[in-house]
Image 1 (tube, rainbow, N blue to C red):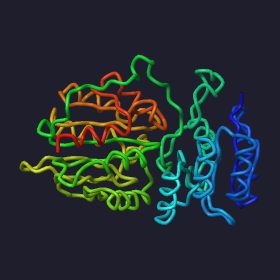
Image 2: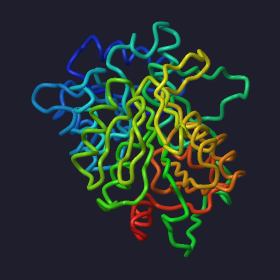
Image 3: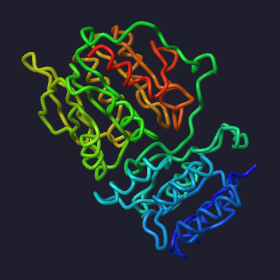
Length: 365
C-alpha cells in the first residue's frame, strides 16, 4: 500500500512540483493538496493522510498553527519545509514544538545540487517518518539515496534492532554524578523536542558539563541553543573553539562543523573543526564527538543516545563502553524515529522513556 501524502503550500508551483516528485516514487501517492493552514486542517480530517508536508508561511493560517490543530485531531507525521535562515530556524523549532516530526529546506537546491539526488532524498524522507509496516518490501539491491551534508537530518529509514533488544531496560541503580566527568548526548530526528524535555529537568547546580550533538544545519544551531538556554535552568550555548567545559553548562555542536573534546594541561576544552572528509554525511557527527570524548575521558563518561534516523553514535558508543563508559538510550515508544537508539540498545545499561532521562539525571544533584 502506498504512503498517502497531503501537500500543504500556498504556492501552486511548489505544490505541483512536489506532487510530481513524490508521485514518481511507486511507494508514495499524493492524495490531496491544500493552499493554506485552514484548508489543510479540513483536508487532513477528510483524507486522513499517512504524511503531511507543510509550508510555514501561508495566508489565512500559518503552518505552525495548522500543525498544532491537526495534531489535536490525530497524530500524523508532518514534515515542515523551511528556509535555512536564523528566522527560518526559529519558526521551524516552533513547528517542531507544535508537533511536527521533521523538516527540510524549502529550496530543493539546499537539499542537493543534483536534481535526481534531491528527488531521492525527498522521497526517502517521506518514507522515513512512517511505520515500517506501511512500506512494501524493497529488494536489497534497490539503490539507497545518499544523504548530503546540507540535509538537516538523516533521510533513510534504518532497520530496527530485534524486539528483544529494544524493550525497556530500567535499573534501580541511581545516577551518581561523582562517577562521571561529562554527559554526552547525541540525537537527530525528533531531537529538538527530546533535548528540551531532558535538559529542562536539570537543576541550575547540575554538577557536570554536557556536550550536545544534534543533526542540524549551520544556520539552526545558534537559534536552537538560544531557545534551550531560555527554557532551561542550566546554561546552554552553541560551542565555540577553545570553550572550556564547565559544570552546569551544555555546549551544542555547531551545525556544519565537527565538535571534539581535548584534554590539555588537565583542562577540558572544545575544538571546533571544518569537516574535510567528503564521505562524512553528518556535520556535526555524534561518532566524531563521542570518539574524542572517549579518548579524553575513558570510563568517566555517560553517553546518551536519543531519537534519530540512522545509526550515528553506534560505533563510538561501542568503543566507549569497551573502555568502561556508561551508555543510555531512549526507548522505542517515545522516539520519533527509533534508529539511533536501536543501534545502541544491546549495549545500553538503561533504555528509558524520554521523560525519565532528565528526571534520572537530576536525582543525584
